[in-house]
Length: 159
Image 1 (cartoon, rainbow, N blue to C red):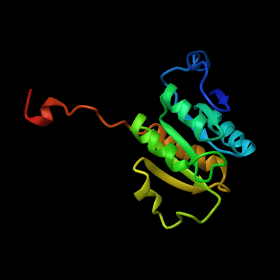
Image 2: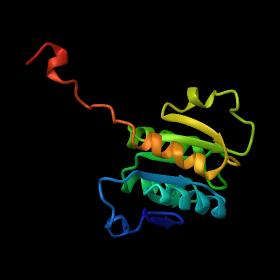
Image 3: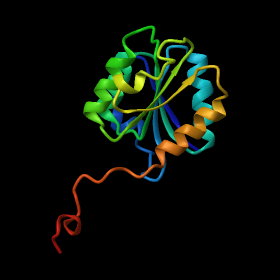
Image 4: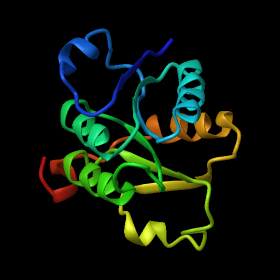
């Protein structure tokens, strides 16, 4: 099963906290101000074998993104501390291959415009949706092939 690491503000000992993580699991960061909802999502991600970190605001999320490589970021659009779009922007800069699944309990961005504002957004769902649906999205996007950093020579006409 996956395991969770939770910090309130910064990543004090990232090497120790993720020492047991292996390379064959989905790595997910949950950024959610409501602790009970964050833990509910975390338990569902555990069931799919994801290795999960839980941050309750922008500062903690940024600290994790500086310390740990993630496949997927589950990000509540309305954070009590900080800005979700700032977290998304930082993730796009620091970890361009990480996909962001936005969740919200409002109708803001219900027109799909979040995909114009956040280049790393791959999905958006209501926070009242079943946690198993969120886990399915994390599993889908977390296992998606990563883009190649170099173009193979055969595609450039080389051998």
